Length: 176
Length: 351
Image (cartoon, rainbow over all chains, first blue to last red; front, side, top):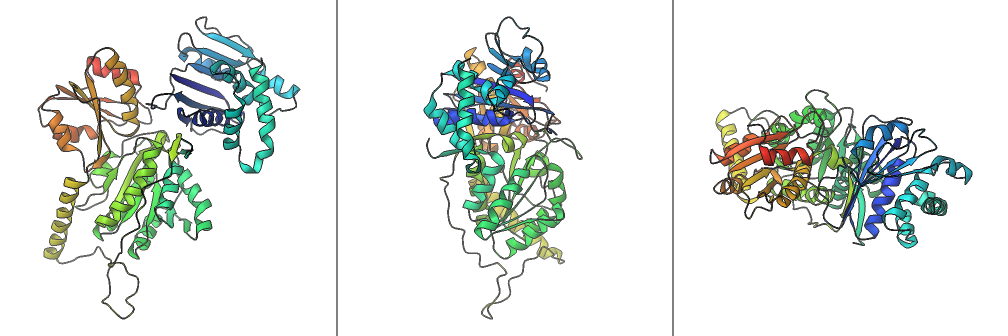
């Protein structure tokens, strides 16, 4: 099975970090994985996106042009990528920042106010992980062991104290 | 897979170079290869190596020339416009028979171009680039693992044949992360009795030089060098064949274009279309023979490239009129989609 995931939003929202976490989680589960960032002249506040592929087979092209799952964390991302999602796919949108509904009717649309929830839970920079938690729940459930292992890899030793709060953010998202 | 780590292609090159014994890196930043320099800047001082951000690409390649002259494993890296600047120094290295690694993580051109992935430096890499009669060994990885593996191989080949070797990657290969095992096939660098390491008053001076004003002598050097190149063409060709057993249509593609093509081939096979892939891993020496043999059976070839059609010339030379050769391409930083390649498989690319 192959899952093609596209995560998109503003630079600074932790888009690339969320993608790296998913890739590491796949690696700890012995999946074939690839992670490819957009690397245009991006800056904080500009758009950022990354392609993540998790598969049981060797990954061909690392470019995700028709995602099975789209995580959209701002309006430009939903506008740009909504039509590219495969029919029957999933769109998870941060409804705190996107003031419209998903238009597609042939996909599962999940709208969660991730940014608001992040603020309410005293973790304002972790909307990315709340929304990723929801994705985990959809993909294969909340497996704390592999999640911890992946967080341990993706969070640098210098910021090791951030592991628990990232885990909590994922958990909040997974229970939505 | 416990021993695998996720790394960007650029980082994998840098770490593999260090593992291969490279302790000298000279470079100048340019997207999309800057992670190589950044990695070296972090690591080299900790392991007694040299990281130096030169004042220009030209300075950097001449520093590579210097370090290679004294027998060090040495490298530089850049992206397309930077490699153009390095071309003079690369020609001098070839003319002085100096080993060294040059990494080109290509971006769209010509000129300053853009920063998105491209394969439009194929001619420059495989046909010389700088002036004079010379070749580089050119290796085109298609995964982060191969970025690491072939960096090590590049140093071995450079030392074995006393010539510069190029890794020709592109923006996606440099930027993408994949699991990579750093359990690499490391061999110690060979003795370099030709290096200018001081005579100790016990031997004649070694001289590293590309100037040779007597044409008879310079011609002799060129002939000797091309005997070496002929040997390399016989012995160092690397390629991958994918679903070629019964292929009637053959895609030839390297690097990211090969990855995209594999998706298209999987889709085409599901529809019963007999299509396979020959992926050159060495672009020089080019896998001419395997393509020529495939052309005895296959009806058509499609060269899939991120350029206006450069490798297709070598494919045509190898096919030598035995089959149709078509082009399926994007350029300027765009990447062909699997759908575009599938369409070319079904209905033909540009002739």
